[in-house]
Image 1 (tube, rainbow, N blue to C red):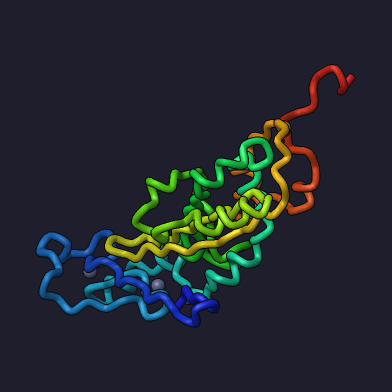
Image 2 (image 1 turned 30 degrees about the horizontal axis):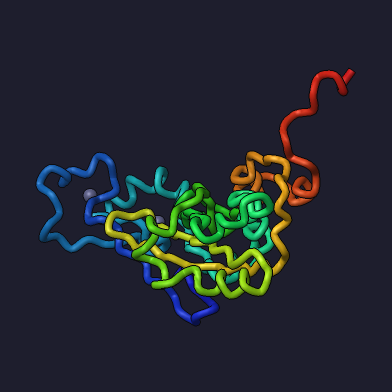
Length: 233
Ligand SMILES: [Zn+2]
Ligand SMILES: [Zn+2]
């Protein structure tokens, strides 16, 4: 049970690996494995073998990524990075200069389980693959019938609205699950109405911090491209 959601108190069952023998030179590969009883690697449950001998022969290769999956809590992970995703909403939707975007777009964050990508102690249990804006109309199947309900209330009270971050978690296996989780951010502040400085690279900054490549202290600096040549003289 490697992925859990402590908010709902559930775990998300892993899909089973495809029914093929992992050993690349398996003598039975040509016949196929349809009616065969095959065993999963007892440690990682990620690969299958048709025989003990295939498993033994594959070990020098497989040991490079075979590991007992850590328990990864998606709710805890989302909460831990909450303020960062809030920032990404402000930058990505340009909420300072174009607050009406909150009624049109969600921020879609595609993530993969880190244990499927690397072995050992990962800087983060989940890896952000991409972040982009999506129109509500493109996300219809996953959203509540009226995703702007709370936004309208906040706007009527003088605020900007409610930003929505949609997390899409993939199992990365054929036939594997795809999970959707939502994070809601209320922006009660008044829209400023003025054009803020255009910031690019908010996706890379967010992904860098969450994926553990950039220290969070960098975020407090202005990230607007390299200093101009004149000032460096
Ligand atoms: Zn085999
Ligand atoms: Zn294994």
